[in-house]
Length: 428
Image 1 (cartoon, rainbow, N blue to C red):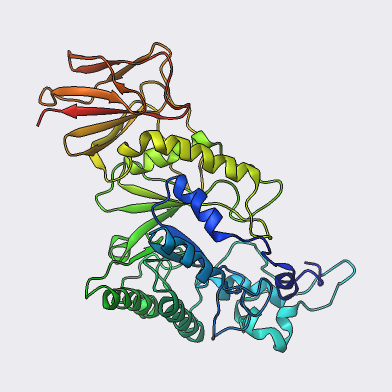
Image 2 (tube, rainbow, N blue to C red):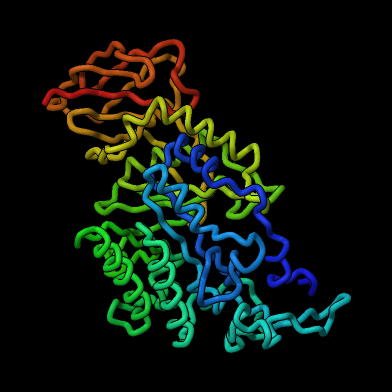
């Protein structure tokens, strides 16, 4: 770290001078967004809203704007449920490196700003986690046991819930503060979960009070232990599920890096769409991050991805929104790789399908357009008698059903260059 490039100074350089949440929200809605999540704060302990608990926020410094409030207003004008992501829980232990100093170079021996009492509210009194002989970048522990931090985190969660009345709250980690990463045997009656449970209760109760006694709020967290994730909706970062889960779940991922980087390599539009289709076939939702530049805009490649998604969703939305998983998620030999933070694009084949359903209609997403212009589906049983088949974006197409297979004749031109969808109406 160079002493002149530290968080307290960098935030003063951030202006977001071209931030236009309404224009961005229009792009997101056109691309298919049905809910929107803004970042309240990240691991750097800088708040993107008008906090009364913390002076290091985007109203006092940098942009001089309440970023969260602006996002919420834009989402509300378009009828989108509004969520907040918080990444504060792990900050106390993650931010331990600010207590160090350079061992070589022009600033060798000069303590980092985390050692300056004047800025302890930003860098935190977390020296207990700093070990100069063990400076691995691995963030362990994920959550601290420090009770002062537990209360501080809870106070901040209550502040953002009270200020913005979110429909969704996302924690970057498991339910604080007994991470499965650090404590594999912790149960919900562990005292370390107290602050987390109180925050979730405040979210639900506040939302219920605003909605006539019925809470509509959701809580996202990443602990896969069933007795923990049942308090909300399981979130899986940069990965997916093997098959249909009985409970709703969510993948959160990004088109590139989590934050804007000029050298970042983005996923292709088709890759993002394939991820989405595989997820919805398994009872999941996709929360997709679009990185912004420091001036508040997004770059041309992100705009292109969103525009291509918009073209696709206009064709295939019938098979996406308001659907439920079919009795199987799909057919074919190709599978997504389920490994932590692995999102390699699958080499799909024409025999690979992902399914959803709505009423008597089965939606079959063909993951690759067939060279012989035929879709052959073998999942249907003799009881599944087909009444008609439509190719979304085209209309009715010829089919035959025999010998346990549904064979659909496809046109020469496909309606979208990405995943295409058949609407198969079954007799009731």
